[in-house]
Image (cartoon, rainbow, N blue to C red; front, side):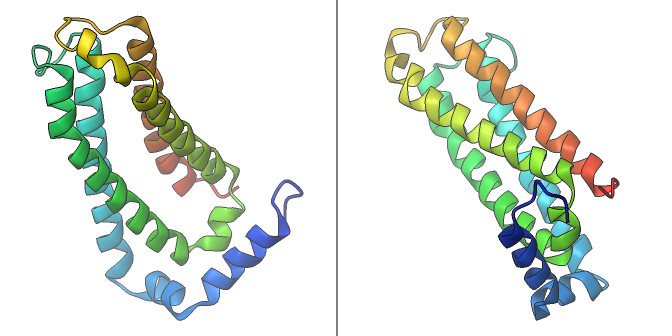
Length: 171
C-alpha cells in the first residue's frame, strides 16, 4: 500500500472488492460492459451540455445568440442527469475493481479534477451568475465567466483523459 493512501481508504476498497456486488460486477459477462457503456452516455450528456454553456460564454457555438439564463435553464437538467449517471455508474465500476482503483494515483487525480469542476461550477453560480441579468445578451460574457468556462472545459477534458488513462495504467 502506498504511504500516501489512507489506511481506511485501502480497507474500504478491499471490503468493496469482497462484497457480493463487487464480485458480480467483476465476474459477470455483461454487467461491467453495460455499466461502462452507460458511464460513457453519462459523460456525453454531461460534457455536451456543459460545453454548450461554456462555449456560449465565449460567444461561439450553435447557441451563441441565446440569452445565458435561457440556455442555462434548458441545459442544467441535462448536466445534472449526466452527472447522476456518472456517479451511479462510476460507483458500480469502482466496486468491480476497488482496490486496483484505490492504489492508482491517476484515479485520485481524476477524482480531484471532478472536485475542481464541481467547485468551479459552484463558484460560478454563486458569484458571476448572480449578475447574469446585466450581461445575459452580451455576445461574449465578462472575463470572470470566461475564466469559469476555461476551467470547466479543462477540468472535464482531464477527467475523461485520466479516466481512459488510469483504466490501462496499473499504478
